[in-house]
Length: 214
Ligand code: CO
Image 1 (cartoon, rainbow, N blue to C red):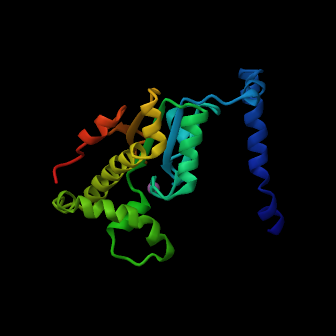
Image 2 (cartoon, helix red, strand yellow):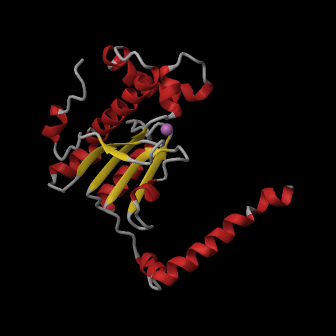
């Protein structure tokens, strides 16, 4: 039992099979990737195991720079997220930042419930703030699943706004770098992505963003 716990043998076997398959299709694949990464996309998504960035958009290693946390949050004091943003925008020069939320998100459900959840309450409190901000809109939805869905969507739009108000993104736009910030949502129930149509490519567009009537 202990040996199995320590080894995870199956994963190494999977890995070797994957390397064989990739190399068969493209013998230069790993050699090429070892030289540099040049992704055009930064993905900011939820840690949820059902929402693996590369897999759901069908992109191979090297194409997506990824940051994931519980609830796909962009918090202005989160050094981890800010470092990812700065590196991807200023060094890798990504052209797209995708904030991707998902339906049936535990963090969203947690923020909507009154349950005590321990330490994580302090993190998903950022989602509770979104809920507070749009409470009239969310509370007007009688169905509890729909309420969660609306909050999932609004949380994405709010994080798009947060990305746009970082110094990193403002500086990029000021120097004329082509940079679009997108808000998407993924449904774990059907595997499909939906565009929330809140794409922002300049400072002025951020101010015009009005997700729902308040
Ligand atoms: Co989630």
